[in-house]
Image (tube, rainbow, N blue to C red; front, side, top):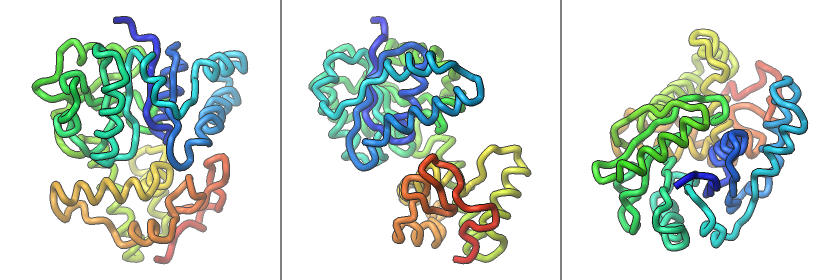
Amino acid sequence: MEIKKIAILGSGRLGRGIAENAATKGYDVTLFTQGAGSQNAPHRIEQSLNRKVAKWAMTETQKRVILNRINYTADLKELKNADLVIEATIDHFYTKQELLRTADRLCRPEVVFILTSATLPVYEVARGLTRSNLLVGARFIPPVVDVDAVELSYSPDTDKNAIEIVKRFIARLGKQAVRVHESSGLVNPRTLVTLINEAAYLLDEGTASADAIETIVKESWGMDQGPFEMADRMGIDIILDWMEQLQKRYGDRYKPAPIIYRLVRQGRLGVKTKQGFFSWNEDGQRADKPGHGQEEN
């Protein structure tokens, strides 16, 4: 079956990134917008494309063509038209499973599902689906349009043809599917939260300011974003959820630093609330000057 129409369940940072990437490569995309912040999805995607236009990476006409390939809806009945379904919602087991069960009833029986979970193995989520053998794990790494590696995982019962369909889709997006054995957290999420958590402990202990830690980590390893910017862009509440799930699986090496809890309790969740480790404006850019991030907590 030729894949032409992509359905993406979830319009957060991950879902938007996959939508933009897929539309750029010629797919027709339906992005299902449900939950807090979903109304900003069209604006956020257009902002991302505007940055490419500003850098002469694409023309205004090309941007409009890409935007016209993305349809936004909250009506799950639209899933009946999908050739491939990508789940990109928050990492809560029952939320994902119930949404996929609904999609299972509405989609054609041959349609393959992609699970993008950072912490939940494919075999756990597949239980209860009539097409459990057509669920393939593909962990896209934000910012999706810039990161070429995708963590590919699947259970022993996963249909081989389904795996090949997902591999071809990933390749058409211009990315490399890297096989990872099923485990909670895979590779990127576990290493990411470890870096963020250790940086947060350093900040809590008063070893250095947020900007000092950010600068040292970025300059040491040639990174575009340091641990605090990554946390703010991902959402500190999401990072905390990952840490707590990993702590249950692997023990206290993933125990969240106190400042992570404090920021979430205060509603300082990062870019989406304009306050986190740093301050952010409407365009997702630093609103505070270096040296004015969270220094004393």
